[in-house]
Image: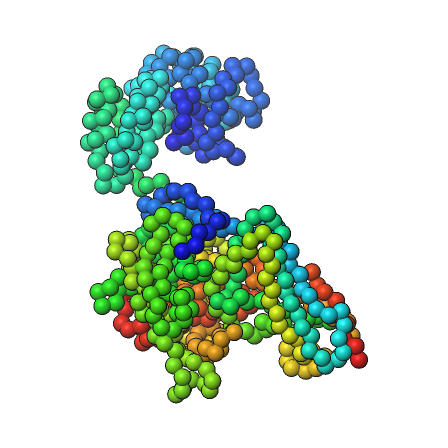
Length: 152
Length: 407
């Protein structure tokens, strides 16, 4: 088994005789961004990449969700209305995957938005924003919203 | 009272405190009139012992300042020394209650230190206290441990037998969480395999084999037995290996299974406990309350039956990420596609309650009174918002894993 760098141990006794306390390492220095074209023509598929980088000097353990890492992409109109969510109406396995990132290491998660609403309708031309979300076993990691213009 | 660490001690009763229930200080108690707030602070008992001959301890008896004196004639010095304190508690010095003490505080403190220094070497000692409210040295002995050893020790140390009181007590426990290493192993605790974390669903005996059940996807490969090795709570901890996967039926195609999908009736697998790993059959870790977000273990539930939930039933789960959550069954026997896979879990139950990554494998149960619960199934999934979880009913778990003794 691999060594979990973030685990700290201290002995104790509980309702039971023995306990070891594990303090999982948490990311304190990461960048998480969403990457996509600034504009696309209406009807064209929009490639979207979520990019997460360890910018710290140490190894980070990220406590992510799923045997295949679960991630969400949220597309909203300029007025804030959500038009598409990658994980809408999805049932996912509630397993934690510990993803280890060495200093400077980046990993990417990719998907494509086909310019359709969650209900399947085509979206109209206009201004939208894209937000990436990676659920963890605590607070989800979220990107800053990225503007996207859909041209007629 | 049990807040001893050095010879200089302060009264540390709950009645005295707002913020620091057990603070200690070496500053002497002032003999000058003091403000009420200061006067309410606990006096330095060592100073009292020096200034009041025969002083044997101070405590509040239903709010009334009460003092042990071996010499009743010392009431005058006592009222002088404790006057400000008494007034601060709303009593005149003359209202201080005096009890006949057998031992002087200085003697008790010396015996306390002697016993404390030696007693813990014997084992089975939970605490040693100079009990101000009893004018004795109190030794807490773990239930089942010998009291005679304490008395022998006291005799050897020259401590009068009558000055020592022993009492059966429970061990003092550190707070542990669902993510800590806990023995005996109970349901709801974190388990670790590969680079994944899940929760234990329940303990069981199958064909004489001591086991625990968790989710099938909490194995090295979902469906099929690969001998997954499990640790509680992390493999990096000493003595954390608890068992090996021994049952995880393969997913099937055809029949009732939708086209191009693979199916099972439960997302469950069984692991055999390693020899010597203590576990509690029917035990489920209990936290402080449902839906309060706490992961601190405060007790345990006991499985006393198995059952099936219907829409509208209130059910519970305890898992390593979101702890004890509780909500209403919204749908039953739902054929459920699993995100990112070709898997369809047949006839599953949906519950409107909190869930998070790492809760996979958790126990699902209904409360039946006191700490007794009815085991209902194994949690494996949830929505992205963490507001709805999905579980496999216990009858389907046993249909696939075989008969299980769960309590």
